[in-house]
Length: 317
Image (cartoon, rainbow, N blue to C red; front, side):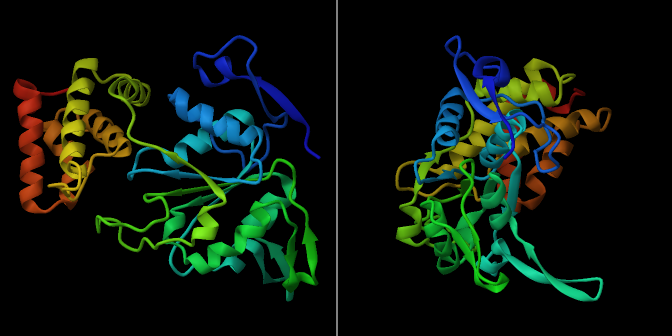
């Protein structure tokens, strides 16, 4: 069994935490499935919820839900990277079957042998199983995870009845743009309403877009040469685009595209990469977001950006 190690929360995640607060991870940081560590600004409340789950899942999975690009997957991967916790990551889709997660027979040097899938490997070795876009998968297939989520052994009939008893550090994390109840907005094509019994086995954490101060730090870490004043204006544009995307109350939004944190970082990065181009901020914004928007919406977003940027709109970064 892989040796564990205690990590100081404050220093490991660069957040404010009470002195002596520690979390358990792994001592071996050479495993190939440990995510690549990248600059990241952790939101304390989300970090708290994920660390509590990793410490003691209590028979639960963890479901992170929120709008596209809000940082659901990156949150898990960057926590795992700092705790040296290997991850088996899968992006779900409508045709994915449980068998693809468990394993299958493959042809190797003229003979067939069973190769364990991400679920079997994670359960056996104590990895995190991350199911990205899980609400795109057939709920009847995902329901096959119910027993192992509760700690029951995984029995692989196809491999001679092999029995895998879940490792104490095995955890299941799912992400989705919905919380398993289907998509009422019509913007997330392919999303399916999930089985109630399956969702009942998850703690649900809402991951919204970061606060402006956090996004300022995120962009500054990703594009340190971009002036803070420009970053602040980009965030103001993003907030207005999101407001028009999300709508208010029961009313649907006026836009069908949104500026996620992922898109915001892309806009900042391209603005610097295309430095010297005519109206570089508009050029970068189009490649980052508005080229896939309807013409009227593209015009509206560019008008918002021009109003926010003022004289900077036609200037170089």
